[in-house]
Image (tube, rainbow, N blue to C red; front, side, top):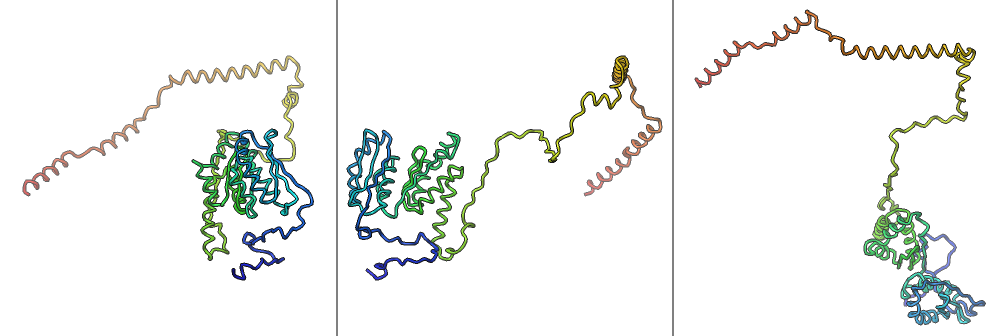
Length: 345
């Protein structure tokens, strides 16, 4: 081994440009020789349909956690899984990793995948998607969009993020490196917010290609990435006649005039009963006279004779017709000349 490989990473207080490139030193038993002071335990429930599978793989679970000096118990009566620390446990964070492992197993993740959480560079994320969409049918469609036809979309997400992803019920379980878990969470949340996963998948593929080019390492990549445009249009029918909005005024509208106000303005209020009746009768007679006049005009409309042309206008029209007449004799002479030329030729 070279000296550069055996050297431990230097600890600095300066800001780091790329934290993902940092190598975290491994935590060894020598770093904690005294062990743990208190015993810790975590329990989680599992559904009835997982009982048979867990019963079969539980010896393997106990064997795996025993390597890290942990205990695992399966309670089939209560339907729960428990992990505990022992006196020999030296890693304080391994119990959290074991808790994540049994949580994933309760959510239908196979044991072969779930045991990977116990590694230092591997983590897990359980994304709750049940409350992101209100309507049930929309939720089912968007969840199916995340899976894709025959699981193709889910498989492409796994290949690009190096994570194992399982969609189960109202949750999405992800398992893999921490950077990949961030990408999976972004894709899942965007999909449930009606952004198709193909946009994020394309962006990840483009980023992967751009990372290979050292010339573009320090440049802005936004011009290469696909941009999502929301094309959803409101399906609510717009009214045919739209009322224009009135200008806002802080003052309330003027109070409409009452019947008494109108009578006071016209002077009718001060008339006695007989005068009021006489006035109404006059108005009624005036309306009847106007209606009778209109009706008479309508009846006499068919008997009104049409307007005839004056003698001067008739003479003008006949003169125009004479001017437009053709000269038949001249036309015959032209045709005879044309025939003679044709015969000579």
